Image (cartoon, protein in one colour):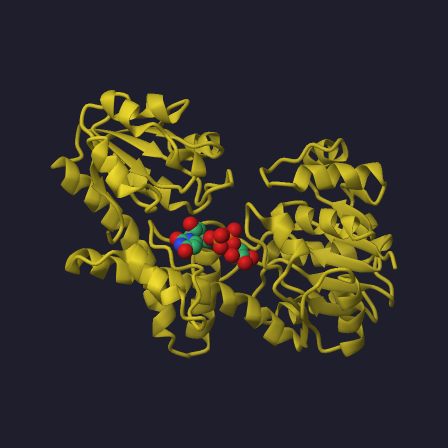
Amino acid sequence: MASKIGVVGCGYVGLVTGACFASLGHDVLCADIDADRIEKLSKGFIPIFEPGLEELVREGIASQRLRFTTSTRTAAEESEYIFICVQTPQLPDGNANMSFVEDAAREIAGGLSPRSIVINKSTMPVGSVERVRQVAEGAGAVEVHFVSNPEFLREGSAVYDFLHPDRIVIGSDDPVAAGRVSQLYTGLHAPILITDAASAEMIKYASNAFLAMKISFANGIANLCAAVGADAAEVTLGMGYDRRIGFEFLKPGPGFGGSCFPKDSSALLALAREQGVPFALLDATLEVNASQISRIVAMIEASLGELNGRRIGVLGLAFKANTDDVRDSPAIEICRRLLESGAEVVATDPAGSERAASLLPGLRLGPDPASTAEGADCLALLTEWEDFRWLDYEAIGATMARKIMIDARNLLDPAALRRAGFDYYGIGR
Ligand code: UDX
């Protein structure tokens, strides 16, 4: 049965949530305070690079199941289910900044009715369902229900992840409201876990922190593999066959980045500190992640003798492949350090170049990998775009000053690179 859904915030999470619910047959009204963004969205132009999203938004607009507004209050008035999908950026102390969520709660308050259910979709600290309730009730909401329904979307496959979830988590101290929210997902095949609000909020943080820990563990093992002459790719493959471990999130590299893992791990750590609960594993996860960047800069420096005056070609700036997102991207931090050490850095990325250039004024952009490599003393592959796997490295090497490849993602075939005349360095290989 079609339900009326309001979505507050048209960023990654809000837009994917709105477009996917429309594709499941619901009537969705998405609100954002950015008028320019709403105007473009209404015409079917989406401001982010997310496979499949533009098609879904256009289908939703054509079927009139997906509409956009600049009025948060209207989205609340016209809907029974209101999803809060605004950003919760990291504060200097590691905690999440809840001011956007609180603003949204105040804005919707006057438009809510006793049928309304307000659902926290963005990642929010434990206790946020209660916080949103207090703010909304303080602004006049009466007899409204509040629920947590965290997203588990990966950038680059967010539409797929929404429509093929491993699980759907719904947390509320009101089981009737939780049951009603679960109906919205009719048509998807996934276990639905109904919990109390705090547990649902914790599931999201615990899942992200666990995945971040897996990556840091893989990086630790890879560094040890390099020291003892083992191959990290083989080692993590051998570990992954054990079903209790699994293959995923065991790829060593420059460390995890993006808008979620660093922020959510820091927020969980801040919570543990606040509660006086020691969580050394989480501390170490972040510490290993930070040191991975220094390690890669050191690898580049060791291969060149020194960084000052060297020309380094960088392949990849986004925090991972298939996204234009450079937020907290290890590649950006590595470029920053190379520039600070006096190196000349020319970089290219299939999607993230422009965003990176605005963050790093000294960075030169190459239009493509071949021109980025021209005259370089070294190439550093920092994002695992498939495009980089299949380049003609023999031709590329012929234009370089020195043929050195630092493959920080273990994307390339070491033997093929060596045949092309490169000194090849991977992570833990
Ligand atoms: C993540 C979670 O996967 C998602 O469930 C949550 O809702 C938001 O955060 P995302 O930030 O899009 O999604 O990226 P993800 O694909 O999970 O990768 C995170 C980071 O880990 C990237 O920097 C990636 O390069 C790195 N990573 C991932 C590794 O270094 N090794 C791996 O094996 C996997």
